[in-house]
Length: 202
Length: 202
DNA sequence: AGCTGCATGTAACCTGTTACATGATTAT
DNA sequence: ATAATCATGTAACAGGTTACATGCAGCT
Image 1 (spheres, rainbow over the protein chains, first blue to last red):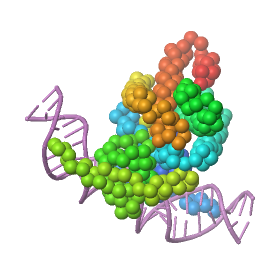
Image 2: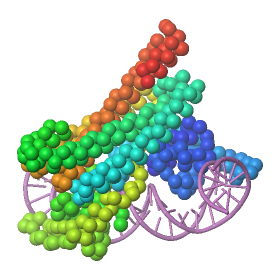
Image 3: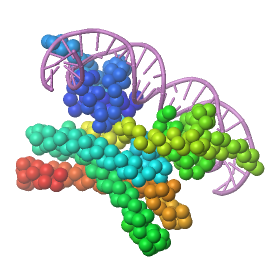
Image 4: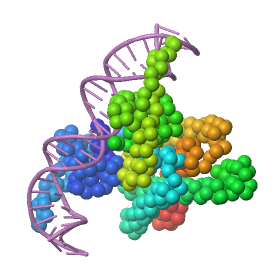
C-alpha cells in the first residue's frame, strides 16, 4: 500500500468521515485531490481495511461515510514501526531563490515579500486551527494515547515551520538591503572593508 | 515548461555541467533522478535553451557538457517574476506522527529518535557543504548579484530547517516522557492537577 | 570477487494534477 | 445572477520512481 492509503487510514482511525471530508483533512499530512481520494477509498475497501455506509441527505447529494476496520487499524499500527522513506520538499520558490542573482534588487525584494505574505496567511490559518483545537474539551486528555496527540504536534510543526521560514525571508531581505548599502558605500570606503562587514553579518 | 526545466536552467546558469552532475546538484532545489534529467535535457536543447558539447574521456565514458544559452537565461530570468505554485511537503513521518497515539511509548520514542538521527546526518552533510563553500574564494563577492548568493541562502535554509526540526522532535520526546510521568504520578496527586501541569508545558 | 563512483540512456510503472461531468443549497 | 460549499465520480495527461541496460576505474 502507498502513503496516501496510510494517510487515509490515519484520518479514519481518528474519526469516520466521507471522501469529501478526507480530501480536506488530508492537506496537512499528505496532500491529495478528491480525484485521487475516491479511487483510493475503493481500493482500501476492497482490501477490507475500511467499511462504507450510505446516507441519504435532504437537499444534498448522498454521503458515504467510511470507517476503519480492525484489520485497517492493525495494518496502520504495524506500519508505524516500519522504515520511512526520506521526506521530499517541492518548492518552486527555492529554485527562484537559487537564481535570484539573475534579477535586480527590486524584483528580488518582491519575490521574497510575496513569500512572506503567503507564509503569513498560512500561519494565520494554522493559528486559527490551534485555537479551535484548544477550545475543544477533548484537549484536556492530551497525552500520547489520546487521539488528539498526533494532530496537535503536527499543527504545532506547521506553525513553527511557517514562523521559521518568515524569519529566513526577513534575513534575506536584510542581506539584500545590506548589499544596497555596500554599493552605496563602495565609493567611500572601498570594497574590501565592506565585504568583511557583510561577511560578519552573515 | 515545468519546474524541473527551470531547476536545470538555474544550475546551468551558475556553471556548465553534465547530466550526471545536474542530477546530483538538483537534490536541494528540485530533487530528480537521472532518468528524469536526461530526457529533460533533450527537450531543453530542442527549445534552444541550452547547448551541448561532447567530450571523450580516457578510461571513463564520454561526457556531455551542457551550457545555458542567452535565450535560456532570458527565459529563466523572466520566470523569476512569475507567480509561484504553493510548496508541497511529502513526508511519511508526518502521517506516522499523526497516528502515534495508536502505538506504545517505546515505539513512539523509537520513531522520533530515528528521525532525529536522520536529521542529524542531513545537518552534518549541509554543514560540510557550507564549510567547503565558505572556504572557496568566490564567497568574498557575496552580494545579490553574485552567482553564489542564491546557493548560499538555500544552504542556510536547509541547515535551519534541520536544526528546527530536531528541536521539534526533542519537544515531542519531552511530551512523551511527560506523559509517562503523568501516569506514574496519577496515583499520587490525581489526574486533574497533572493534566494542568502538562498543558502548562505545552 | 564485489562494491562504489563515473557516465548515459530507455521502458514500465505508479503517483498526482487538471479537466470533464452532475446537481442542489446558501450566501453575496 | 454568480460564486462558493457540499458531494461524488471518471478520463486524460503530466510528473516521478524503479528497474533494465552497459561499461570502465579504483578500492577493499
